[in-house]
Image (cartoon, rainbow, N blue to C red; front, side, top):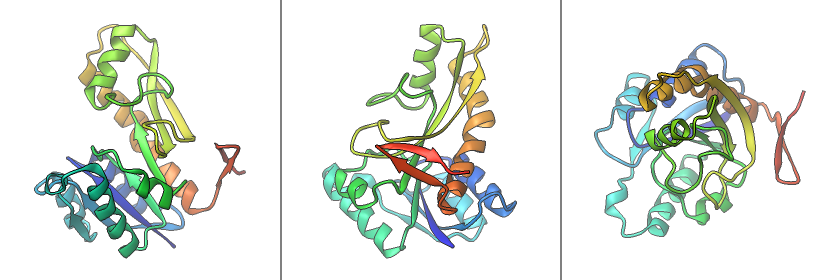
Length: 208
């Protein structure tokens, strides 16, 4: 059974999707063993508490820079014996000390179809605002491995939704979360825990 450590910064809706998937048996070969938050008092911590999942708070504001903060995160991941790290609305870019130590063991959900509307500065509603500004007809979400470059790791899964004429960024965000993010993030975690993802030439492939 692999240890899944979930990193959060806010309300934790993606964390809840993972918890629900684990409870219903959709995540095979893995278990959420710890939640780490970059802020105190966020609702994601309540979700962990309500489901008897151990939680830790490592406040970003207590560290002078990304490197010192990332080192604290790395120490916590090592202590928790993390096999898989899931970034679920985690709003801090991790230094390469973490991404190199856990290469192809950190997954993130990005609310667009990478390589569109991604990279530094593209997060939250900004992603959906840009997609609507551009007039795309479909959007979606991407589950990918995390490396040293923002949103540039190997793509594991992608899913799409149609963009409607009267969509607002908030409406599109909700549709993508409900129809793609909350389904594909647990699926990717399960595939990882079952050793069904292989990396060939820097690309991720799902084994049959």
